[in-house]
Length: 306
Length: 270
Image (cartoon, rainbow over all chains, first blue to last red; front, side, top):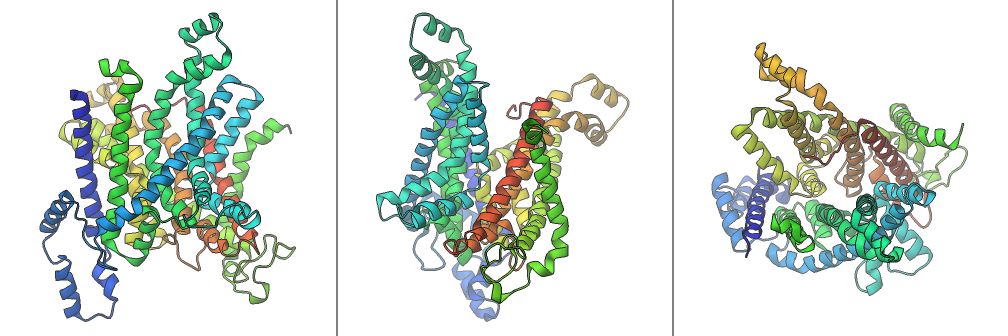
């Protein structure tokens, strides 16, 4: 394995340790006593002490942190306060739905953004361009917790095309994916446009045109291939936003993923599950970014050579 | 007045309306919380221009109360996080050495998080309330300012006027505030503009999830959440706060775009 890849993975590992520490501090240092939240204010002091000991909350912070890290290495994220199931098992059950939704959202985003961005770049300065960019600005500004209910109203309640919530039928993923993908589509469309404009000014494009290639071949085969790189960076950076956006989208549509699990766990003050959800989504994000970095080398060999 | 004028004035008009609504909010506060059972889910009419909600409260007055919430959170978060970010970023860039190293590592870890996720978890753990929303959002948004400020200070600190100030015996705090901040300000202002839009959406999102301000206080986000249950019979309950929120965010983003073009700042340079 080339040294560059090892270095990048090493850096990702350092960040993962930092992220784990931050999540630990978040749950343990922030005011708000889980024991009080679980037992209520009128609990007997002896019950509190017993629960505190059972959860390991009476240990010094450093010892709790050591146990937490050791547990992480063994993929042991503790047990849910609510039903005593291992958090790792609960997460494993929910993760596939979130991944499915995120990929569908990304797919929708690309399907919208690529044609829109290329078209805007091709028709730069025209009405088409400004219409596309206005549309994209509207897409960035529309909050997903508003877009979701609107889509439900039109397509589920009025037209009856899709189910209101859940994930039982294949059609059920369409509205959540659109809700999740719209903001990313809008951002990507702008990125594709900017990147295409830059590439279209280069010499090899003029060569391609000069040798008589059709405009669509120039745009899609020659220009887009090099315009991809910055777009890919943005996808990597925005995927975290996509995963976090999934929290709201899943809540709107009752989608059984990690996001809706997080919101339910927060409301139930089920801290091990909260901790597990945040950790899982963050680690996914860090890994995706590392993979994005490595993908550059594959797309643009000039970077690996440096 | 041409279409161009209208387009140019649009964001300012929306901002003005936002401000006026936020200022009028307290005056309408009693009306916004007045339960009026005979008029539950009333459609828009002359007496209630935007109709009434599921408790008969006038939607327009609730919108005004929500404007106050979003304005307070939007500007509160930006002020707090920009101050913290500029201070830490400035220190890192100016001091260098291990101070820089530590701060950069912290920034890296925060950047590795999807910010809104951390804010959701933090708001959930801190518990609901306006102050906690501001804290949760400020904790995740100072990073952008810190990174920008550090980059700015690094590129500015060996300028002649800074060397001159140092030669004249100015201390680090004075150099940072008097000689670096004014020059580093432009990109920070652009970032802050987008930051206001981000914080307004994030506050509404947290309130939508039930982690923001608590009833009977109004937030556009919680208005949308409460309205969803009555979407078929009273679509105005969801439409009004959502459209208002989107207009405000669009206006602020437009201003940010315009400001960036004018100041010609490359925001992603670091």
